[in-house]
Length: 141
Length: 50
Length: 237
Image (cartoon, one colour):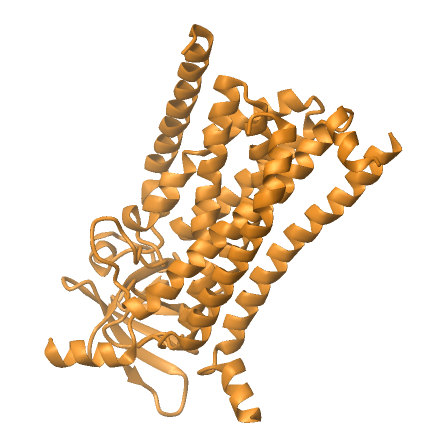
């Protein structure tokens, strides 16, 4: 390669490294804020004011969903398999909301330790399979 | 026949979401291609007028 | 391929084939995915959006990598054709990123329960969309085409840093978006009768990109060479 081209190539590599470095700095500075939600353990450890809106996420504990018969009120437990958070919510739940499925809730942590949600989002996983296969896996596992 | 069509359109209830995405893809790709064809026509006109 | 008239003649021969192959792959892949592939055990039929969403997202990112490669060749070797390729690819990459964002949003509503959320994957993809817009804007703001090529080439290399962030966002942070189904290290967490049509769709999307790129590039070539004799010979009888 002729020297001029080599020089231009090195300059470009320097530009790329600089840009990667800058991006990495921004990303690591924002790192905590880039998380969409916190796990129940993180929330219980931190001292969070009652008026601050936060997002909590985890799995809906099996058998914890209690739906009210005459209103849209629902109460369920979100767990990260270490700590749990009891969520109260009034509203329509997304289709994929279910026990043992991921969920992200937005709301306030009350002083009594319960969580009043104003929004419930379902989180789904990266697995896709036909229902028959899912049944087989369940039967064998 | 009509029932078949409805099954196709609505699938298990969320079919319209799926068809919207499909239509949006076709629309955007077609716009890209149509724009390129239009540009070519303009260019040919310009070259002939030079 | 280096010489414009040669490229023009050669591309007119392969372009119809690219178009035909793209239509074949897309129609089989999408027909298979939307109507024949089994339904998902959890999401039901709405998961079929991924047959449009996943290939668009893949293309949005790989077109950017292709553009950065063109940018490198343009800056180091001063190859004009690579600058034209970069310019021709940008609107297509932006279109695919837009399709990924819109279809993702439409998929999010019935599954997650929201059209949009500011999680790391969605936000970084939106940034990619804006980088495409910035590239196109920068290009049109510089009159001298050689200078514009060079500026856009350098910006495409600067912007390349967003690609690993998008790719790893679902592993680095807590996101609403699910982690990757397809990884290099493990077998896909999707059954074969679902990912086979997806594979056809991805190939089809690459082909339609190649087709549209050729279309744009041919326009770019005759635009820049319009006063040359070979162009006149083709278009002026």
